[in-house]
Image 1 (tube, protein in one colour):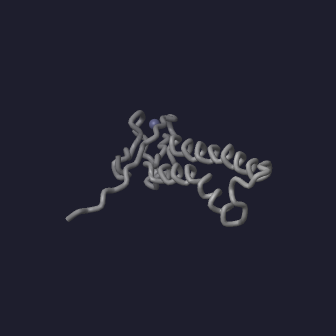
Image 2: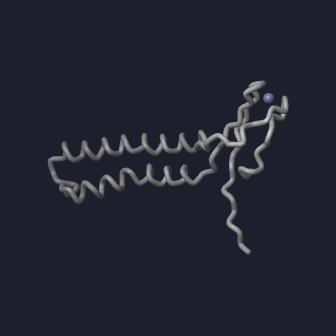
Image 3: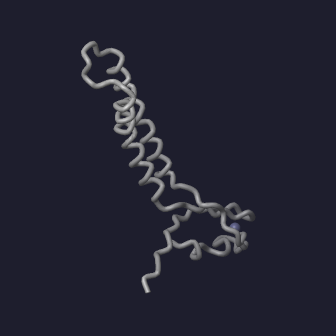
Length: 115
Ligand SMILES: [Zn+2]
Protein backbone atom coordinates (compact mmCIF):
# COMPACT_ATOMS: atom_id res chain seq x y z
CA UNK A 1 0.00 0.00 0.00
CA UNK A 2 1.22 3.48 -0.84
CA UNK A 3 0.75 6.43 1.45
CA UNK A 4 -1.69 8.06 -0.98
CA UNK A 5 -3.84 4.90 -0.95
CA UNK A 6 -4.65 5.24 2.75
CA UNK A 7 -8.37 5.73 3.33
CA UNK A 8 -9.47 9.35 3.62
CA UNK A 9 -12.27 8.64 6.02
CA UNK A 10 -13.18 6.06 8.61
CA UNK A 11 -14.67 2.93 6.98
CA UNK A 12 -16.89 2.46 10.02
CA UNK A 13 -18.44 5.86 10.64
CA UNK A 14 -17.26 8.02 7.76
CA UNK A 15 -15.43 10.56 9.92
CA UNK A 16 -12.76 12.26 7.86
CA UNK A 17 -9.21 11.63 8.93
CA UNK A 18 -6.75 14.42 9.38
CA UNK A 19 -5.15 15.16 6.01
CA UNK A 20 -1.81 15.24 7.73
CA UNK A 21 -0.96 11.59 8.12
CA UNK A 22 0.40 10.27 11.39
CA UNK A 23 4.15 9.63 11.40
CA UNK A 24 5.48 6.37 10.07
CA UNK A 25 6.77 3.97 12.61
CA UNK A 26 8.81 0.84 12.43
CA UNK A 27 6.94 -2.45 12.27
CA UNK A 28 6.97 -4.45 15.46
CA UNK A 29 8.89 -7.10 13.54
CA UNK A 30 11.59 -4.54 12.74
CA UNK A 31 11.85 -3.36 16.34
CA UNK A 32 12.09 -7.00 17.43
CA UNK A 33 14.90 -7.62 14.94
CA UNK A 34 16.90 -4.72 16.36
CA UNK A 35 16.39 -6.02 19.88
CA UNK A 36 17.44 -9.54 18.88
CA UNK A 37 20.55 -8.06 17.27
CA UNK A 38 21.42 -6.00 20.32
CA UNK A 39 20.80 -8.85 22.72
CA UNK A 40 22.87 -11.24 20.60
CA UNK A 41 25.87 -8.99 21.15
CA UNK A 42 25.87 -9.43 24.92
CA UNK A 43 26.82 -13.15 25.18
CA UNK A 44 29.50 -12.77 22.52
CA UNK A 45 30.96 -9.68 24.10
CA UNK A 46 30.88 -11.43 27.46
CA UNK A 47 32.63 -14.51 26.07
CA UNK A 48 35.37 -12.43 24.46
CA UNK A 49 35.89 -10.36 27.60
CA UNK A 50 36.15 -13.55 29.59
CA UNK A 51 38.72 -14.93 27.15
CA UNK A 52 40.71 -11.74 27.42
CA UNK A 53 40.82 -11.83 31.17
CA UNK A 54 41.10 -15.50 31.98
CA UNK A 55 43.32 -17.05 29.32
CA UNK A 56 46.80 -17.62 30.70
CA UNK A 57 48.19 -18.41 27.33
CA UNK A 58 47.60 -15.68 24.85
CA UNK A 59 45.18 -17.32 22.47
CA UNK A 60 44.02 -14.11 20.90
CA UNK A 61 46.29 -11.13 20.40
CA UNK A 62 45.56 -8.31 22.80
CA UNK A 63 45.60 -4.67 21.95
CA UNK A 64 43.41 -1.91 20.62
CA UNK A 65 43.38 -3.22 17.04
CA UNK A 66 42.26 -6.72 17.94
CA UNK A 67 39.79 -5.13 20.35
CA UNK A 68 38.23 -3.15 17.53
CA UNK A 69 38.18 -6.22 15.28
CA UNK A 70 36.54 -8.24 18.04
CA UNK A 71 33.99 -5.48 18.52
CA UNK A 72 33.19 -5.48 14.81
CA UNK A 73 32.79 -9.26 14.71
CA UNK A 74 30.63 -9.20 17.82
CA UNK A 75 28.37 -6.42 16.57
CA UNK A 76 28.13 -7.70 12.98
CA UNK A 77 24.82 -9.55 13.51
CA UNK A 78 23.36 -6.50 15.23
CA UNK A 79 24.45 -4.28 12.36
CA UNK A 80 23.06 -6.67 9.73
CA UNK A 81 19.76 -7.11 11.57
CA UNK A 82 19.41 -3.35 12.11
CA UNK A 83 20.06 -2.76 8.42
CA UNK A 84 17.31 -5.23 7.50
CA UNK A 85 14.98 -3.67 10.06
CA UNK A 86 15.54 -0.12 8.82
CA UNK A 87 14.81 -1.21 5.26
CA UNK A 88 11.58 -3.00 6.13
CA UNK A 89 8.27 -1.41 5.28
CA UNK A 90 7.12 1.26 7.70
CA UNK A 91 3.73 1.17 9.34
CA UNK A 92 1.16 3.91 9.84
CA UNK A 93 -1.56 3.67 12.44
CA UNK A 94 -4.86 5.28 11.56
CA UNK A 95 -7.26 5.89 14.37
CA UNK A 96 -10.74 7.31 14.19
CA UNK A 97 -11.24 9.96 16.82
CA UNK A 98 -14.99 9.58 16.61
CA UNK A 99 -15.66 5.84 16.90
CA UNK A 100 -12.29 4.49 17.95
CA UNK A 101 -11.72 2.41 14.81
CA UNK A 102 -8.05 1.73 14.42
CA UNK A 103 -5.91 -0.06 11.88
CA UNK A 104 -2.24 -0.36 11.00
CA UNK A 105 -1.18 -0.10 7.38
CA UNK A 106 2.14 -1.20 5.96
CA UNK A 107 3.43 1.43 3.59
CA UNK A 108 5.39 0.46 0.50
CA UNK A 109 8.25 2.56 -0.66
CA UNK A 110 7.19 4.44 -3.77
CA UNK A 111 8.72 2.65 -6.74
CA UNK A 112 11.06 4.90 -8.67
CA UNK A 113 9.75 5.86 -12.08
CA UNK A 114 11.45 4.00 -14.85
CA UNK A 115 10.32 6.12 -17.79
ZN1 LIG B 1 -14.95 6.12 12.85
